[in-house]
Image 1 (cartoon, rainbow, N blue to C red):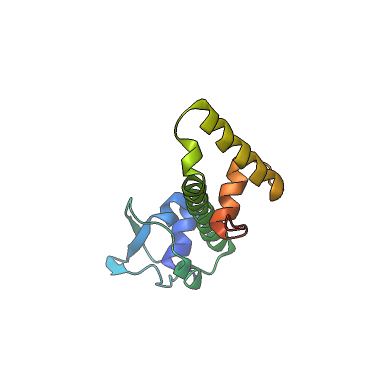
Image 2 (image 1 turned 90 degrees about the vertical axis):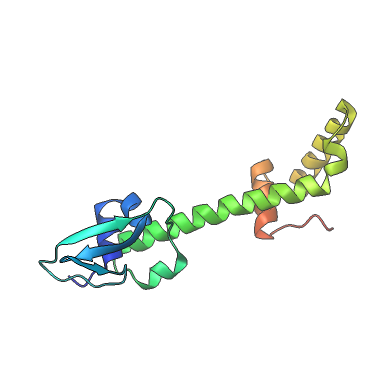
Length: 139
């Protein structure tokens, strides 16, 4: 009682919640914000292309739904940051990454230097830090 359609979808399964587009409540179409009452008959509608949105946090009340949405957003943001960071490295060290073995060794040497300079464990951490803007290649 008092939970939204989205809370209910996450209660059933996190994948169902993450792909929820709305619901039919007692035979009528309802948005993800609709607050359920005891005795409501709910049919969750989903889409494979739907993904959690930050705005959804305003429409859920249960801690399970909030934590699942936050976890998805954090994971997705990290993936995007890794992609952006990798692109920055490739652009910054482009002249070394292509060509002969000497060029590839120089690329790796410069990459190792960046890891040491920024005190990062591996390339993935470097890509993430670059993507989040925590470190910069400009210096």
